[in-house]
Length: 528
Image (cartoon, rainbow, N blue to C red; front, side, top):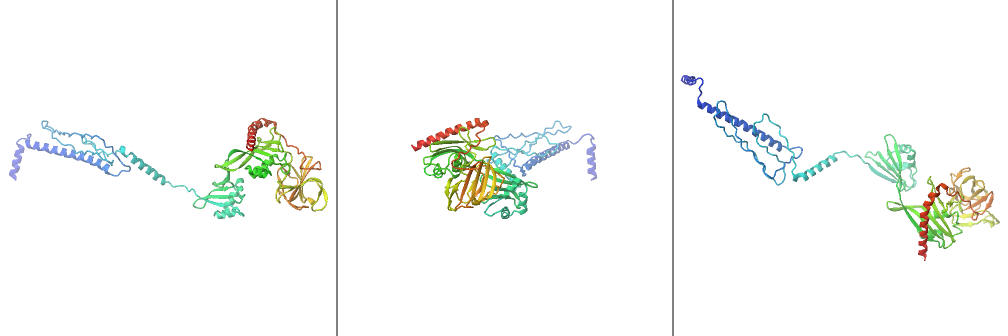
């Protein structure tokens, strides 16, 4: 051992500055191998990190575009490590890390783009970024996924409770308390609704055949109430923070113009039925000309009528008849025509083509009667008293309960029982005229002594009180206290059309009169 130590010291001491040539070569090779190993480790680590980033599941699909032409790979790089004092040494060739080439695929899968090898060792490790690129073939797939995501997101939103509808039909004898009980709604709720507003009080005016619909939530709390009064009108009640709101809704009707014509063979009622007129239109036609024509006494076979009227439609189906716009009646060769006109306040009346009012100050007949049972005469055999005595009025036979109308505007000066007249109402019209209505079964509750009435207003109902053998209306007409025959007296006319409406009336009446002429010509042609 001592000898070896000495020989080694001698070897080193032979020259303080001269090294063994093989030791230098060995050092160079060692350093080169170390550098190569470090470089390869760094490059391999960077590639592995990129591959791991692509392989890990992502929140959204990462799809890469696969190019049609292969991406050229980077050439092998030569790395030369030059040590100090060894400039004449040849560099050692070091292969670059292996790079994988992406192969073409049939269906797009999750892939990554391989990056070329770095030219130099990075100073620090960068966090790889995810590359999001859509392949053209994958666009439809992504749209489907996106739509599903949107659907799922909508379903995750909590839906608002729209409630459940319950309906009750109003029956005979029903009231709101019973209906609310069947709907499982509290009496306290009914009280709060009825007293919430003036409109809501109308809910109490229910009639058989109407419907009450309510919408309640899962807890049974009221969300909405609808009182359907008819096909076109309903009352809606909605709860607010502390009370309720009520609103009336009216559905609009479509108006269409219709016309018809007919010839009387036996009676106006049957002839109007053959012409397709409803009972209401027939009565309106009679009321229009009722001041000029006595439909009980003056109608003759061969008389003709024509009218233009409105029809109102709901959802494409006829709902009801509207007003008569124009009418013509030929009675015993005499022609009567009437045009409907509304003033600025919406009040409609009928006027002759010259602007004279069709309405007279008095109705010719104040009741819809079946027949005249007794006329105005100076001597008539009384069926009850059994002797002759004057009959100073006209008896209109009608069923018990038939409404009796005021013959004209006036004031009630008597209401009560009056001898043989039974239950009687007497009206005063201005300073000259009075009318008497006898043998009533009952009075209209709103008609009392001193109250004012309008022409056509119901004042009582037909009966047989007093000296009467059957239900009828005894009607008298007096001028300055003197009895006059209601059937023959010339009735005073109402006020004519105001001058300020004359121009507008002419514009309205001209096309209606022309259409009446056309209807009349068609009727004559059909008859021939």
